[in-house]
Length: 386
Length: 179
Image (cartoon, rainbow over all chains, first blue to last red):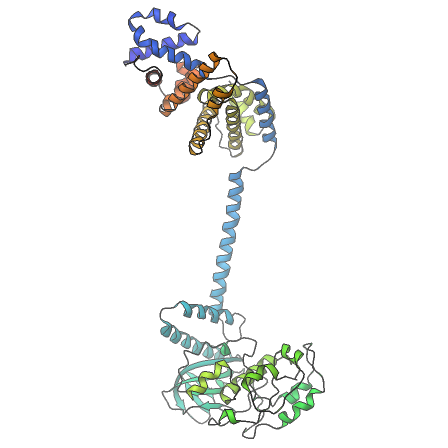
């Protein structure tokens, strides 16, 4: 296998290519013939291996090739590159938009459009957190910071927060660093004592320098319940409660902007008795809230030791959802409260004023502590604790 | 042999230039492919595939600026290898043997076809370089200098590859005749 034999073989192959027969070539190299013979026979076979194309096949291929060249078809690679570019752009947009939403919501305060997002994010965090207690404490701290921010900006909003009671004066409590204004409509549950943990449900106003308290619950750890549906800054009253109706008489007179089926005048008379007959124990039947954001306030704190189940005086017409109003036209005015029936049968005759949400919320809050027998789910805890 | 000016015009997808390239290389490519694959239809499909890849390369500006022939043979080599991989993965009845068994051919022709297939199978056992040398040297009847140029090797290296390839084939085709 030396170089000279490689050259010799190559010369023989050239001769084969020139058309010389194998035996004739071998005759020229008698001393190498034995070695060359099988190789030249193989080489001769190799020359016959390749075939020439048929002319028709060549013409067909030419036509297809030129047609393919004339068609401005994108190669798959280019299409894929474009697709990948678009997909990547969309991904970037979504990630930034989603992240941006959460980021923007992080600074939201009660009443802001994104506040619901903020609370939802918190709920998700709570769900997946291994240390819920610590997280609850952090969120409680957040609630207080939000309230302070609202007060500093003089913004009116509904709030609920919890904290340590630091100072108690007749008209003003200090909970954490937050001044809380107490008036005759404020319902207080539990014995206030400095150092106690309290939950405050109330609202901030444009003017007041503190939180106007609607309900204060002393001695309850607000953390666990601070994420109640009730506390969400949502638009729907989750638990319309029966004790809160003084304003209905006036509100029914307001033409509703909502096209509900039943704003008929015939309903107003049925309301009148309840509207004009507030529960006897109410110190004040109607309290006009200082805030325009809260046109109605829960007017009816009752003594806390009421036995709610025995209570019979019920100003029953309550602001209800529109759906309910459409279906039911009968107002069962004062009647023994039946928790289960309440949702189904009671009717709200009052057409919905524009600030219906707020009034609904007002009744909700006061009812929660007013101890109506019609407590809904959210308030069950309160009752038990009491 | 086409000059580089023609290749530049091919980049503009100039029809005349493309037609000239096709006419110049269809037969060499067909011979190159058929050197390794016996079935005529398969060869035609694979040569078409070479031209399609050439077109895509032109559009993506990845085609060569010169030595188009070497580039096309390189692509043809890949196309043939891809074809072999596919048929290994999905081993249907080998087309070549179909021809051998079904075609109503004279016994002599059939015997020749059978030997060609045996030779092709033996070639697949060679190294990639050896296969390339044989396909150019015998499939294209190229002088050794041109094979060396296309493969970017020295003549001596190509001669060595050639001799070892033929010796290996001869051993397989006619055992005992070669040491």
